[in-house]
Image 1 (spheres, rainbow, N blue to C red):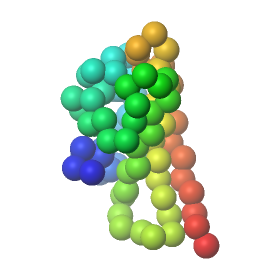
Image 2: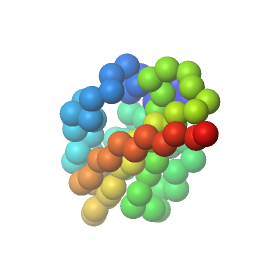
Image 3: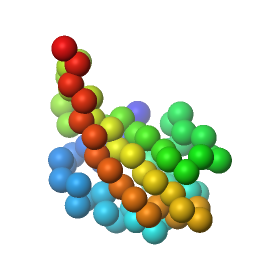
Image 4: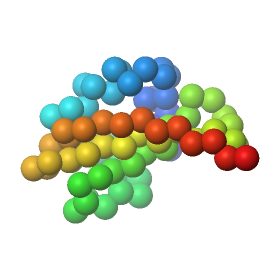
Length: 79
């Protein structure tokens, strides 16, 4: 996960706003493809601010017409 580790330096959603408007090809160059399918309109990346088995952070990218139009951060806790 070397690509998403560079994104994990900060916790602020605004730092991901620069991704809006990027194409799928540009997103692959920046973040990698990981386990995403090139033909789907929702891509997910696991990001980590620090190593934790109980807290999982995910970045969701929503595409419309091959460009990112939505960005969402979700945090899950496992018990």
